[in-house]
Length: 243
Image (cartoon, rainbow, N blue to C red; front, side, top):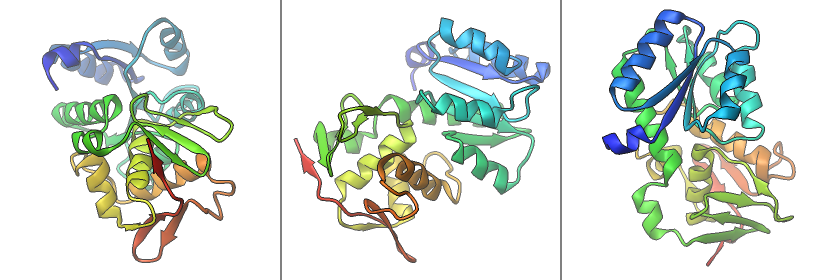
């Protein structure tokens, strides 16, 4: 990411620990980002309506409303990228954060340069699909009444209403649409969507599939569009028409 791109990105840090909040703010400003900071959900809610935030760094343990609840609330009407911070390194904490809609996760204590790398990776995924997908993907992909627009990066349901997807969800659904009726392993899906650059968690693909199913399947517990292939991965079953 160039310095110019970094300067165009506005990051909101929601962290109640003053020392961490100050350290991360100064570090990111040093690397060319615009930064706002909040110590609680209440302070965050005052900032969001008044600023265009490109990415949020969100601590799980906050006074009042916790980070998981905040992430769930944000995901109800926004695809803004979220990286979660937590003092816990337990895999279950990572899974819960991803299930709430987070784009990535980093455990405290962390190296600021690792956080910077993750921010750059998430912003790249949010701003555009990987170059290989941009070059090969038609502008419009239609399946089972749904419409995926790779230029506007939006999904329309059969009633022509917009369905909000995070950048990670959009890229994964696009990968499925580009390879319909074909079994794709988890490793192949990681290669197609992230190029393995984001140090993905073991269950990240499974959790993203679960989140997409809740948005496009009639019954997510008995999926028809994205089926699990035992010991294989997943298969996107509908016919896809490109325009």
